Length: 203
Image (cartoon, rainbow, N blue to C red; front, top):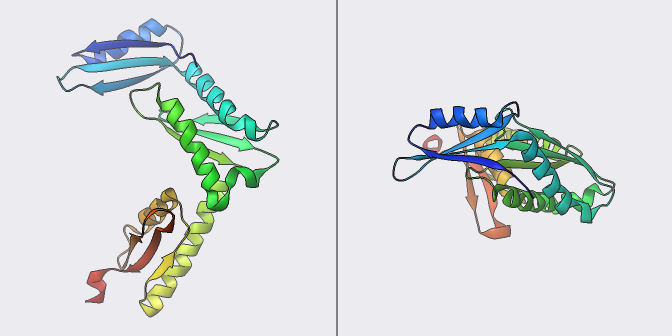
């Protein structure tokens, strides 16, 4: 993967950013800025088009062997800190796997390869046929049902078979709930999320 960059080490990151933009001329660029232990800054610029090409090449390398006919597109955020790789395949089940584990693993691989080239980590979201949006919608629906049950009988409920990112979604969703909280128990694949009344509410 070829990814050209322009780098400056400086005490004045704002000035370095302006210099890098001038060096790229009319080419749109993304700039990372990292403060060092000695107080200096490393400022690195990349052409946005090259970043997209690089991510496309990595996704092709990882995904194509699983389905020669797969198609995908890349949607960057405005800041170019987050990217969504949207896939369409004849074999959706293969890419998703049990409880989304295959999709999560493929996303991790693509993210790890892409981030080798940047001093600041970029977020990669891999989705296929809108699975993650549908899964999140379903998950929130289940959580709402559990919340109503607990509010009725005040007994905790488990929510098993969630990926770490899905547990985080539930944690975040219930973070401001005045009565309920969440707790993860167990290790590895047996780790289970519980929704339960807050201790203060029991007293």
